[in-house]
Length: 286
Ligand SMILES: C[S@@+](CC[C@H](N)C(=O)[O-])C[C@H]1O[C@@H](n2cnc3c(N)ncnc32)[C@H](O)[C@@H]1O
Image (cartoon, rainbow, N blue to C red; front, side, top):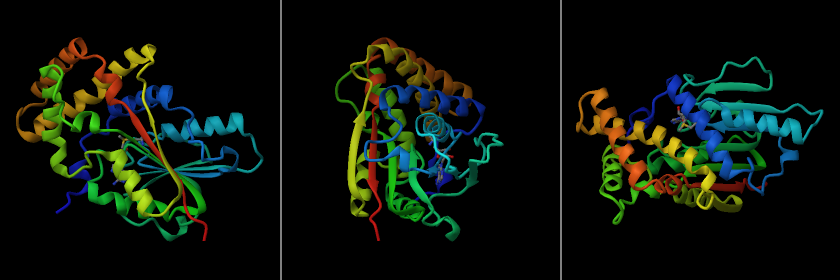
């Protein structure tokens, strides 16, 4: 049986994780920019839903960009949905709304067909492979006919495909994460799974573009910081899940030691493993 969302999701939702998500956004913006794929015309976007919004950082950046570069008298609406309110920002801005909703359940009828753009980012640790179709069907219901979808995922083949070469420390990090996370049924190739589902759902103009900081040495430091923050949570939580460690402190210590080794022996892995795939498409007109 497919596990429930809360059994799959390995990340926390505390203040540290919120800061990590905001920093991660800042890092990936350096090499995934612009915020919208080419297909999406910013001047025609007035209502945006962000699914699995977390801290809402992507929505806020989009609002800033549209305000500055595409000023208009027509009001814009930004709606973040997430299975948990724990990381929602405190906002008094009327343009923004944040609602608790599990993407695996249908959205309320009043939300159907209201949005010009639906954005999704980084649900790869939250969905089992066989849940993408349901998630896509639910979020498609939010779009107006002709509305746009942009779904971004890390290309997790960077760690799910166990390396056959490279230093033992890399092999060990991947082994631990696969043992802790793969049994939940997540897709081992999230970008390809999204692409397959969007193609099957017959979106128009479906494309996938990959974005990576390889070849941008000025991003190496940020990439290492990102890897340290993301992998130490994933490795330590995996060690606890599999029972290889029984205390949080020991699991964190072991994860940190492995990441110290990785930083010395294979720092370039940080640049490889943060590759992002962006799938975009357009809901068919009626
Ligand atoms: C890795 S965070 C990404 C947050 C944000 N999209 C970003 O890129 O900064 C994944 C988010 O998805 C949310 N999430 C997990 N399962 C979900 C579900 N079934 N439906 C909606 N949101 C979910 C989590 O609570 C978390 O906020």
